Amino acid sequence: MRTPGQFQQNFPRELAVSEAAALAGVDAIQFRLDHTKEERVIGVLKAVREASGWETRSAPHSKAAASSATPVRGQGVSVMFRSATYWACVSQISVTPSTGAIVVEKMTIAVDPGIVVNPMQLKRQVEGGTMMGISHALYEELQFDESGITTRDWNTYPILKMADIPEVKVVLLHKPEVGTYGGGSEAANALAAPAIAAALFDATGKAARRLPLKADYVQALLKA
Image (cartoon, rainbow, N blue to C red; front, side, top):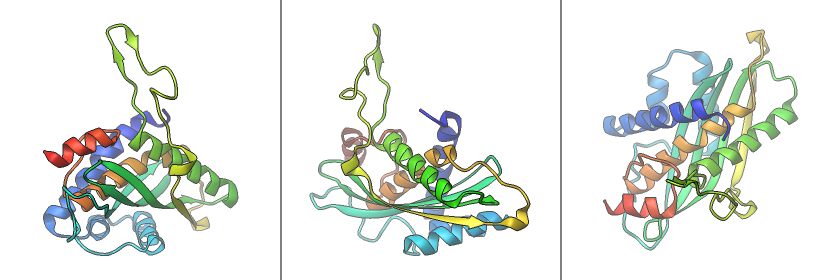
């Protein structure tokens, strides 16, 4: 696993902010905009809102359902600052409550590292980090018993497959006036999980409290 520290911090923090926005009856992106004065945070949030086709409203969705054989859809957002770079991510998912299966349909990521040195390479790094983040959020889990680690192969430690890869849109914010450049790759890993979990909350009205969001856990969460 990459980015373990940031991954563990960002998931509970950003999910809590999304839930606070829901309690306030305020759109999750607007809630974040209302509580920051940092122009670069505002910039990535506005960029990801526009690029993703975000539906401005409070969560959960008016059609949210925790018991249905028909897929329901939701959207979620997360924000992060790491290594002098500002990030925002929107996840759009569908989940089938009766099976607990989550399908990530689209991921949109806005990144402001200050000076963008190599746009194509940065875009590729963000795409790769996003795939790893989705894999962490939905599948990857190290298991063990008294004998030791029991996840020893790709059957017991599943990862994201090519068939599961969603549409990914990356928005680069080139800010030469900043005068410096920040880190632009590994941090993308930690954006997906809180955005996907927030989208699950939006779609079902149920808040996740652990990862990964495997089908059996999601089923139990929705029945609780």
